[in-house]
Structure formats: C-alpha cells, structure tokens
Image 1 (cartoon, rainbow, N blue to C red):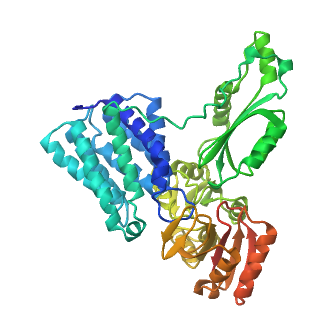
Image 2 (cartoon, rainbow, N blue to C red):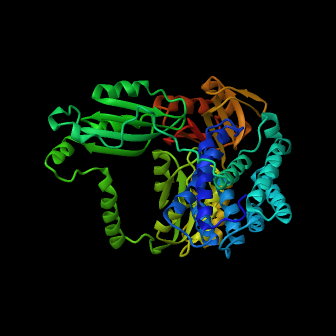
Image 3 (cartoon, rainbow, N blue to C red):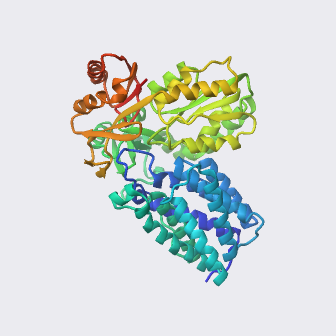
Length: 564
C-alpha cells in the first residue's frame, strides 16, 4: 500500500485522472437529463482538469504543495461551465490545505479534501444537495475518519471513493428530476471518476489511452523517400479536424465530394468531431466545404511535391513541424509591438459571449469591445473570458455571460484580473445581454449603470426553439431524439414534431401575448424564407406586439426570441 506520495507522483495522479474522465466523459454527458444540446458536464469537467494535466506535463515541481498550486491555477483558468468551476474550487481548496507539504500522507489528503469542500461550498451561493457538492463532502468526511484509523494515503483515498459512491447513488433520491429519469448526478460521477483515476495511478493501473485514430488512418508524415515529385497526382497532404454542429451529421455527401477532388481519403469520426485526411490540389476548397458540417478546429497542409524535391536534393524538408518555431518568432514580434493587456483609454468597456455572426454583429453595433464565441454548446473557459477582458481598453469592464452555465466562469475573472474592475452581470440569455447593452449610458456612474443594465435585462423574457439531443421523459413530456423543443425562460414549454405548430403554441403563451416588442433571431440552419414565415406566424398570433426579424446565425437553436 502506498503510504505517501511526492510531487512527481501527484503530478502523474492528476494526469491519470484527466485521462480517466476524458475516457468516460460521454457516459457522464449521458447522465444529463435535460434533453437540449448543451455544454455537457463530462466534457466541461474533462476540459477543465485537462488544463491542469497540460500544465503538469510541462514542469516538474519540488513539492506536492507547489504541484497542487500549479494544478489549481490551471484548473481555475481552464474552468468551463458550472461543473468545471466547482471542480476548480475543490482543487483550489485542496491546494490550500497542503500548500506547505513536500510530500503528503493519508492525513494530509483528508485535510486537503476537507479544504476543497469548504472552498466549494463557500463560493456557491445556494449549495444544492444531491450534487457534486454532496458527493465531495461525504467523501471528505469519510477520508478524515479513515485517516484516524490508518494514515495510509492509498487506503484513505479508497475509503473516500467508497463513501463518495454511496453518496452518488443517493443523489437519485435527493433530486426529483434525477429520480424520475433514473440517473445519478453527472457532476458527482465526474468527481469520483477523477478520484478513481488518481487511485489507479498509485496502484499501477494503466492509464486510459486518448482516442486513437482508426487503424487505416494515415501517418503524420508522408514517406517522401518512396515517391518522386512527378508521381504525385495530388500535391497537398491535407489533414483537419472539424467539431460537429450536431451529433447526427451525415458525412456521406462530404465523402463523395472529397473523393471527387483527391485521393487517399480517410475520415474518422465520433459523436463530437470528425478528422479528415486527403490528398488534393485544392485544400482550401476542402476546408471551406468542411465548414458546412461543423466548426473547423485544426488543419495541417503540406506540399508533397516540394517536400519530395527538397528530399531528393538533400535539403531540409519543410513541414508543419517548423511552424512552432515560426509561430514563436511571430508571437515574440507581436509581444514587442502589441501589449497583451490594453491600457485603459475609457471608463467603461464591455465583453459579451455569444455564438453566431449575426449576434456578434448586434453586440458590436451596440458598442461591445470584445465578443467571445460560445454559448450553450460551447462554454468558454475562464481564461478565454479573461483574455478578452485584458484586451478591453477600459477601467471598468462589464461582462455579459448570456448563459447560466457561463456565469460562474466569468465571475472567477473578478479576482484574476489585476488592473481592471470586472462587473459580471448575470445575463442568462443572449437577448438579455442585448437588452443590457441597450440601457448603456456612459455618463452614468458605475452603480447607476449596473442598476440600469440589470433592470433592462430583467424585463426580457426569452424563448428558444431547438431539437432534442436525446430521448427523455422530462417535465411531463415524452421526448424523442430529434423532436422540436420550445424553451421559455429555461423551462421546457412544449415539444412537437411540427415546427410551425410549436411556434404557434409558443406565440400564444402569456409572455408573448403581453409583449410590446418581440425580436426573432434565426439560426444558421434556417434560411431567410423560413425565418420570414416564422416571423409572420408570430406577428399574426401577437397583433399587439412589434415584431422584428434578425439573422442571428447561432448554431443548434433555430430561433431565439426576445419578448419585452
């Protein structure tokens, strides 16, 4: 049994934990009972602790206390969604509890877990039982008792996990929604996966492998020695990754298109993304076509003809491996000419989160300095938000998260930002953020401005039309994957297989009937003709309201409707 661990062991434990939750993130995502597409718990927790793993792989630390501090800092900056923020808070307290420790034993681990729970409960305004908070609290309490019985780190961690599992199983009885769906809390499950990954590391259990490429996937580099330039029909070795807009993306038309413009085609995919390898003479067109199916994340293009010529001539073969040095050189030049942090040039600045070119344009037109791409399906990290705040040339920066799962990540910036005051307005929808910006008066003092913006977004009622990402029995509705869903103020309003019928039902709601102004933002999957038809339907159903139609370009949500 492992009695104590040093810094190197702790670093490997966190890295192993990150790999473990990455391997199980989809199972954790599937525990989410609300059927709308969203930034799921497993994905957010995996990305959050993944930031810590990346940091710990870069450096070696002299003590466990220093390694834990580095991990906590990375977790805080990489925190995504409420579950990611709470996980970062647990690690922040954990690091505080062992900050002076060179090595840690079972007692130190129990103290660290207890500090983590205290930090998380303190930061959450209304702690709810039957969540990750409950699981972590019960696990920490058992760890303390186990440490008094046997001061062995391995046995204390094992006891904490066992008690945490009992608490997790009981979450189904503490939350009526979980009970009806027959599932346990996703955040609590994620926390235990992380603890189990840490235990597996000290027990020598092999680390889960990251998602492997298909056996038929190409090598990272072509075998240039085996080919001559004149034998290369298609010059550009092209590899790219695209994150899907929706899980059920039919890639067959794209496959046929790529076969028509190249060869050596391989496409690998999972529920979230797909990776393409193809040889073609028009890589730009391949990338453009790919964006019809999702968001381009990463691309590598190499000219095999010039590489073959260089190899034949005995020269250094230029490849994408050289880009790291080039990028560092460019960034060094940028650092000299452009400061990372913008000095204040005005009193107020504004940062907003949204997804969609149309919505971004609206915010820019209203005076927002920085727009962060993100929202329901793409929760930006605390670091993403902080970078935009730093770039805003103002003394006071108002942040509009525009999503309830981003508010906590934004609030972490308030203590991380050193040279600006950050005011986070708890806007939960994009229309609320727009309403807040419409109330801006730069001549007001800070308190008056905050009050005016808060009062303005508080008047807004938001409805959204999307689709069901999974089968669910939720809120009295038997929902099938792919059904149209109407949400009103974050609550499931109705579901239907007929979009027009659902829109009409929504238009008859009290919130819409009482509105004086209704704005309809249509998404990227809706054309102008369809959008106009929807606006006409709402206009007919709400004769007392002034209805406006605007291109939002938002993914996943066909319509986002603001009622005031």
